[in-house]
Length: 153
Image (cartoon, rainbow, N blue to C red; front, side, top):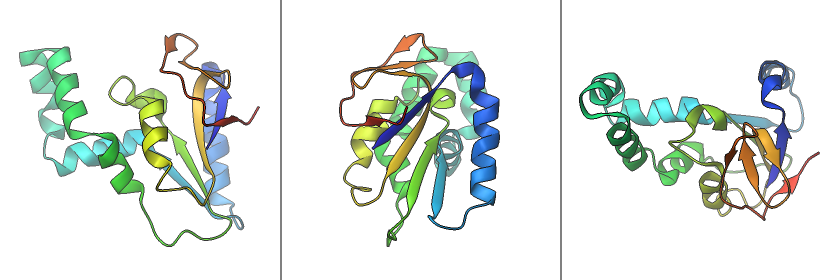
């Protein structure tokens, strides 16, 4: 596991870089998972996506967040990311962690991914700071400590 931490204000250049990387790839094979798109897929499959605005206005943000977290578990994300067989040289890139916060936290995804992608590198593109021990999303929100990833910078 690797973390590519970048300044939050660099989000748009990072997105452009990832789009170029996906469109110009040859070898290694780059597999990009946008966690926000996965969240939308999960909610759509569970038939709650269209009801979220009404749920929030009627029952409040805290209730809505609890419902989304109950449906969009780390296991639900992982299930959508599984593919076999992994090929030598594959690289999995995770994006969108800032867009799924606070419904999903980076350490939850990384902890659950380890056994699925233990034979290929996984890189989390992280808008914030990673000290090698702790994650701070947008340089403001402290996440739980995570010691198992290498900082790419």
